[in-house]
Image (cartoon, rainbow, N blue to C red; front, side, top):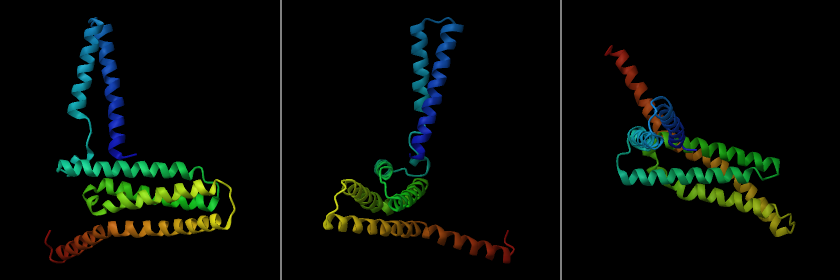
Amino acid sequence: MLIYRKNIIRFDILNTLIAIIIFILLFTILEINIIISGILAMLIYIGSALLFAPNNKLVLLGIKDSNKQKEYMNLLDNGYDNYEKIINIKNQITKPHIKQECNDIIGKIAKILKYLEKHPKKIGENKKFFTYYLETIYKIVNSYFEISSQNIHTKEIEDVISKTEKTLVMINKSLDDQFTKMIQNDALDLDTEIDFLKSSIQMKDF
């Protein structure tokens, strides 16, 4: 689940509890009419939601363009949807080594999604991860499960299953390569910072 979604859920629960407590205080302690108490509690709930709800984490992280906000949020949402669908299929796979392969793939997808959510400006550079790779991984895993679960053992079916299993290994490796490319610029920036710090220390410029 997206970090901003978790924040929204926590906020909604807390805001609802506060509204209920306010309603109880108004109705039982201050003895205000039940309808008026309900209306006041609801207005406080709505006002709090408008003022304080963490409804767009990307804004807080510096994505100010409204079109990009919407586009990136949709990409992340679709990414997490595919991630969850892959998990559901993986749970139904019975072959231990393929289940483990899918576990590794899922772990790497989660790592990439969390990284991109924390660095939303990089989402635009990695649209293909959402629009092609995740969709394709889901389709491959889903098709593999559907075919392998039919318990049909013709040569053609066995060849397709074997080819798909080898493809899952390739996918696993490719996710490592994609993540390495994503964080490469971070490593370069860190290297530059270290060089600058060393230079400042040597020059006693601090």
